[in-house]
Length: 408
Length: 142
Image (tube, rainbow over all chains, first blue to last red; front, side):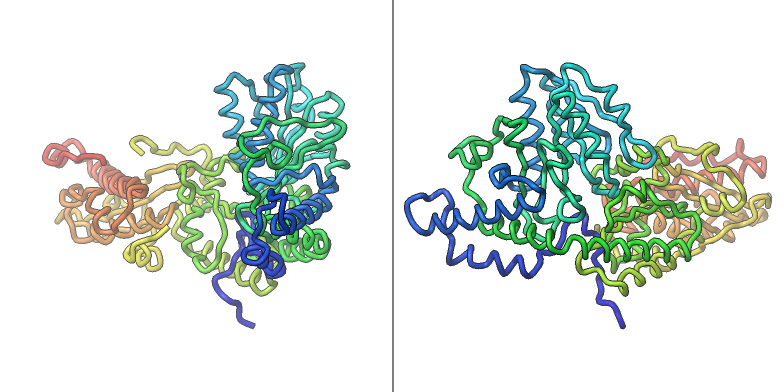
């Protein structure tokens, strides 16, 4: 059986919309096109009903009450609303926020902006396995700490943080706990009450829903979380997010959440099997390849591997019929290698050599085998032209070599 | 990222990949860049001592497609040139030939550095580094 090219293995970046989701959305573009805020005619009522149904579907996926779901334009907005909204609302209580060095930029850059406004931010380091230390977290907490924001699963290495433990610590100290749960929700069990999460950011397009719609879970009881809005206007979404609701997008988000809830167990089992198959096949064909981050605490559909002595962008060029991401500087807009991989302390050279694989609902065994075999061929070819591989084979310790970096 | 056809051609069919004996007095080796920067180039020239002409050139590169293409092109250009002609190769020539975009100019700079380092190593071995060469060519670095 031949595979259809190109192969998409970049499901952490985005996912295709499930056809069942598209079908659910379609009527809301043309027939039931009303504004959910129109209170005095059936067009508005239909739209509002559809939004409330979706709100319940999203809430059900994470064990929340529908009233605790605030729809946004996506997870970047949700992260901004959670962190800036809580910072502004609880400023009188304290000015300290705790986050982590491997957070998504939507959280890190938001924290950096708050630092300019007088907030103090602690960026917790991660251990080699990509997880924070709970002792570090406890040590960072002060009586000025108002918010802890730690992602559930990392978007590059798929490592899952000890969210329940962090939630328990935050609860005990009376500190709000926000988590960017974008990569985890819909893929692994996530329950806001079990995990003692006060706020959680979610995105539709990472779980087979449409782009441009997301949500922030905001706890209403024990404690009741209040947020200063980022966007002022008509007072939609309990005043926390004004702006006409994206009804078709929200309907799609709801349907996507419902499908994830139904299929999570099946999908995650199937995908972890394929992921392990990919990993085993790569290890069979190649030596000196290193998995970045914990395998134990990891999303079932993620694999992040460094192929020593080979640069990531040249690797991507060699597998141009496969869509994956690299932590190489050459593939990033900032021309810096992945800050997430650097934070693991594995050395910048391994960050340059990394590939992130994200498997998803339509990934097949044939695709995984094709990718593993192709990568094996390309890595072998590139190593034959790598001076680093040659030096290593000669027994030179690359880490103690003097490199000429001047003028470069 | 869109690559020029020439970059793709050099990436897919790199010229002169390999190594020359480092200890040979007629071989000059240049190793430039650093793994943590994402590119390392090893470029070697073998010079005919009686004519001063580069008979052979080889490279190995750890780096992106443009870095591989820049060093592959450099070896192609080096063959048949005298040591002095080789020193006249400028990174901008490589940029033009490969249509490198601005973010990839450093790859061409590294290739020029590699050429210079290889020839400096050859001259050092020959004990001629203090003589002719350095005075007649002044080399902009970028």
